[in-house]
Image (cartoon, rainbow, N blue to C red):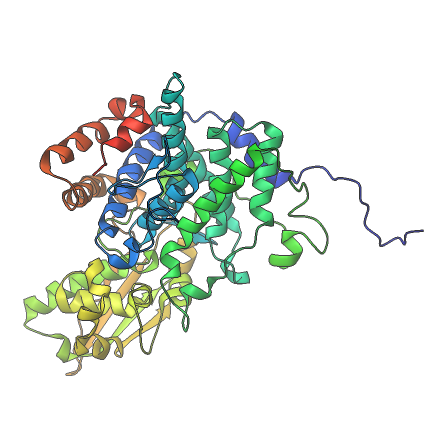
Length: 485
């Protein structure tokens, strides 16, 4: 005879969070022209970031098939490379390229993340499905489906992130990439409703990544391939669900053994808004600097300080102290002192970003490499930089009508004088600066194309990418073929 505390073995109803995700992916029709326009810019920016990463051996050593020489018939092609892979490994390749330089889009809320990380799984699966369809004499998938999946993946990841902080329980935000990729890839694969629920539950029941590789003293390169790992895992789980693999209805809410009790301090998820297209419409693009987003406005302010120093005939050697007035999230993630051991450590240190921008008048991916970091002036200036939280900056950061990411720099000199404080509230990739930012985003894409392709191939990609009507009706495999070596 069971005791009153013995849980029932009766299969429960599906957790509401899972049902809401599946309902949204299956039933919601995206009608926002702004969302599609932003998704198109997100597509080219994200692929451009991947192409730039191909110039870094630390990234390319991880790419290709698991077994050298493997070729998959009708496999997904990895843009900018000769690889044709199964969709799981292709998703890892593209996801790793996208995230390697910390230069793709960002979403800031209670949880942070990069929703375009999901493109690794989305484009790999869509490309594979399109090639399979053509081989079977069926119509290919069009790029419109990729843009729709991007909008929905952004929305799932971003809406969960608005009110739920995974970093505060030590988990990495890539759990949301895995969940979002699983859901939208499941829809592309044509899963039934039950299979979709199974797939999404499998994503939550999975082991989740710790954030330790993003923070001192363990900051390292896994943060650059963690999203590739997550989006490829989402593809794998969706494919497993397609075989009929079972799901776990109360994976979140089950007492003792569910995600909430095991990994989220017993607290259920909270939601600020229903799923729609809000996240894509408001996503933040990294246009000027490959750096953790909470420091973007700090780097922009530092570029202004660089110009001011030149104008008044001063140098960094004349600086006694720099105070960065910032938001709480910046202080918690990228306020670092002491040795920085590798590029992954440096691009998550606001003092390093600001010091390089002041000294050199630039901040590029190469500036995180050992050759630049060896300049002793950088660490000398870092030691003079302190961060203080401004409660108003923190409040505005969380305000859904503002979503600012403000930083302010005050420079004091050894002779007691000081520059006027330089304040940058919204980075150039913010929705409030779209008109200013989009031409620069397209220029960034053109620069990244030129890193990899001859002029005629660059122009073919631009012709297909910059015209919305052309892009949306183009078969996915034909668009990906444009990026082939």
